[in-house]
Image (tube, rainbow, N blue to C red; front, side):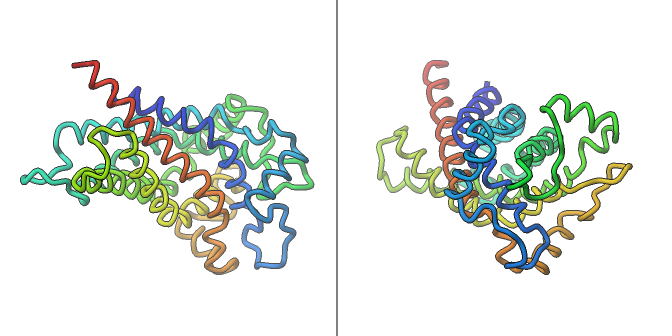
Length: 300
């Protein structure tokens, strides 16, 4: 039941934040491996990107990749939050004295995130491809011509086999390890601290909301460079064997980006990342916490 509630919570958040994921993906691919000022900026900021995509690609384009995004969120977060919830319920995240352990929480969050992200990697790759697809006048990054999620998975599987479907999976793991451990550790620690200070009544929804807001800020700051590198790894063109033509791995992607675009290139789309990750973290953790609270109240 923990896994089901976790997956549903993440899907609920995803419906609201997917347009921001589309904007974030395109801003991260804009000016890929080009020095600042040497390329046309189709998307000047988050709000301009929304208007441009809506005007050129149509409003429906803001929900591009929604199907794989929902499946990925259910898979990834169902496993991640479900596993973390079980560890928390069984007391693995507390010390012998009964206090919350940030180190154990971070380790549990990272391990749970790795399992979910690796299994959902092919879906995340296809989601990135679909969200990057745009009309030629505002296109950024490599343009795949997928007709939909199932067609994309079938085509990649037929051309490159299982290796092709899981291309970039290992490179995407540092992003998830850092993001997941930061998110769950800061959420649990903040919630535990607020409970000790008795700022809100016990089991109050405000407790989960404030803890999720703090967690959202921490996640965006820690994960942004790895998120940019991961998007580019998944979206790069490939040769006949399915091997990436631009980057050898996550470290190569980070180094090339920093070398050609500067340190700010590694934080491209951070505004969209916060507007997306902030609400997504807040909504998914809030829904997760509330669903668990309701379930355990009535299960007893």
